[in-house]
Figure (cartoon, protein in one colour):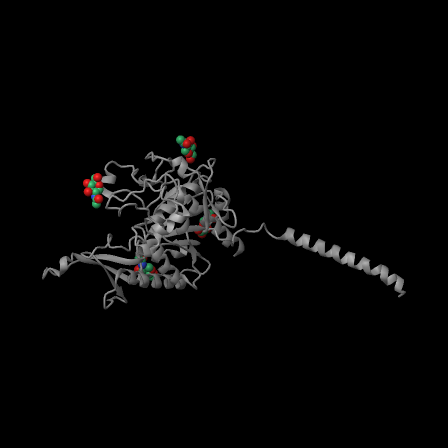
Length: 391
Ligand SMILES: *[C@@H]1O[C@H](CO)[C@@H](O)[C@H](O)[C@H]1NC(C)=O
Ligand SMILES: *[C@@H]1O[C@H](CO)[C@@H](O)[C@H](O)[C@H]1NC(C)=O
Ligand SMILES: *[C@@H]1O[C@H](CO)[C@@H](O)[C@H](O)[C@H]1NC(C)=O
Ligand SMILES: *[C@@H]1O[C@H](CO)[C@@H](O)[C@H](O)[C@H]1NC(C)=O
């Protein structure tokens, strides 16, 4: 080949190669599905006021519980409470699109297992999803089962009440001999046996969201009616303190979930929902009449366990839970930090019932609906979408 020709051919070849490469990459980028956005951290960010923001549902949603239906009980500031938008640091959190989400979940079921804070979460989820299927029907099974069925999509979303996750039952004192320090009986907790309400139902669900938390305290189980922990049917000796019992329960429940729940089931563990009792415990006139979220700089003062405040247990329990979850396939649903800000968003004195405050004190633990749990729904549905589309 004459050298002249080569020197002409060479740039041509380079040009052709570049052209082919460009075409190839264009083709590649078009054949890929619309990218499922976040492996970004949705749990870190800030609340930003957006006066145009409106809740997706109102007080007429049939799945409400009275005590959390803050529009019905005419709680002050409901407009403001629902104008705050959670903005993650490094990406945007889209609001759930109920029709798209239920379409994605078609023929699948979502289950919540745990205490009333998971029920609070469930009610928000049901009211949000109902927007896409007004034919949603209450769904109940024996015992504690509660939820809704969405007929347009053949989807069930339900809650199983199991406040300690493990099985427990009240056993009144047998003998009348001696005073036994005022003991009235015990709550026997079988650390290795899941509560009846969820032990045999996990196959029904494609997504499960667990939690346990605010029942692990001496206000629920005082010294006269303590938790006594059993393993393999025998009392554990020496008896465990409550939080050591919690740790053992967590280890056993997590290992049960790992072994018995099908691996295709998406599993989440919702970390603690923080309480906001100011000036005292719930039974000591503790109150949460705040008009706006706390500032980031105030959070440690409220929640750092080393400060020993009224609301310190959330972060402490999270620490225990995260240790047990490490290395498992259960995803952390860390809603604690974003919720810590929201001292303004509890039912407080608006409980929908006369005298409720005098009897129970303010509710600075559950959340108004519509409200903060709607943001939990946005996050959970985004993580489910991401897992299903990439899984
Ligand atoms: C409440 O929401 C329903 C739809 O779920 C709507 O038909 C109704 O007009 C709303 N009521 C108010 C007072 O906004
Ligand atoms: C509805 O979903 C369930 C799974 O939850 C499935 O077994 C059933 O076949 C579905 N029904 C219809 C009509 O598609
Ligand atoms: C769960 O299923 C097992 C095995 O079928 C059965 O022995 C047990 O009684 C069931 N437990 C409950 C609470 O339904
Ligand atoms: C709570 O408030 C009531 C009424 O103001 C008062 O009588 C009671 O002593 C207070 N309780 C505590 C524990 O501060």
